[in-house]
Length: 103
Image (cartoon, rainbow, N blue to C red; front, side, top):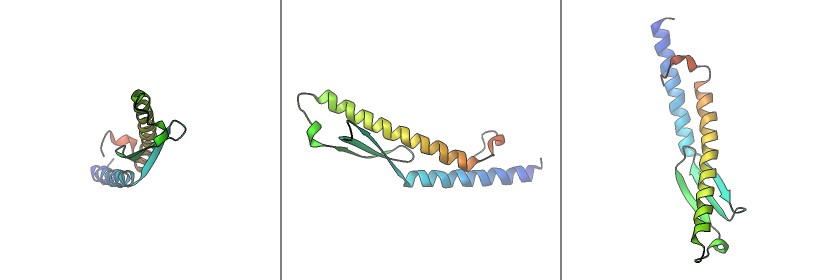
């Protein structure tokens, strides 16, 4: 393969990856726990944006349960974001897997 063509393909792939990363950073994904009593919102790249806790699950005598619900909601939201990341990045790289880590 011509080195110039290879470099052009690598630049095109890098551009697509950058665009996908920008889309991911702009989108949000939710995760929930406790039948929706605790929800977490993260960006498509996994950064936590917010956590919402229904007052009914706030029990000063059982802080561990609330901690577990928050952790579960954040984990689910981040799992959902990871699935979107894989789809977006896979689409961005579409057939470019042969570039051996470029991009």
